[in-house]
Structure formats: structure tokens, C-alpha cells
Length: 109
Image 1 (cartoon, rainbow, N blue to C red):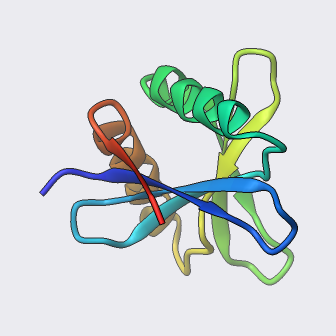
Image 2: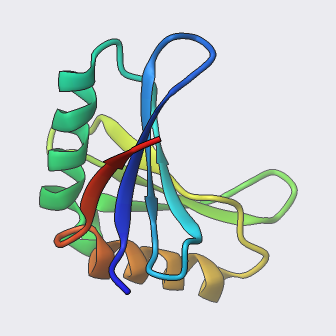
């Protein structure tokens, strides 16, 4: 099963997307966008920038858990991951985005 981008409207009125893997697990969430077209542009940016692992910024939280952010070519963060208990979990999350983003369909909820 292929991954998919799911767009939804937040309580704040902004548009958000998540990237779900083929198993339905959320592997990435976006920032809030003030318009649907901005959200669509964010998805296009993920498709483009997720091809290069160097665009993923690997981070460690204060509590020792691991996560990552995906940055556009201008350095702005496009989206971020969930928290992982291990570095290997974080690295597998990055690989999953790299694998799923390019061909993921877009749906609304």
C-alpha cells in the first residue's frame, strides 16, 4: 500500500498535512498554512526535498528522544517527525519519508 498526504483543517483555521506510510502510520506533520494553496505548495516541497537525505535535520530532544525536521532549500522547515525512542527509529522514519513522499496521493479529511 502506498503512502498518502492527508490534508485537514486545524482548530486554528489553518490547513495542515500529514504524510502517512502505507500502513497508515503518521511519519511527518506539517506546519500550519493560511491557505489550501500554501498547503499544496508545502506538499510539493516535501516531494522535492525528501529526495535528499541532507535536507533532514536530525535532532535530539531534552528528554533524550530523537526526531527530525525536513528543510526546504531556503532552510525553512517544511515538516517534522514524531518522537522516537532510538536513533535507528528516527533514521527509519527519514527513510520512510524518502520512500513514500514522491508517489503519495493527496486526500482531504
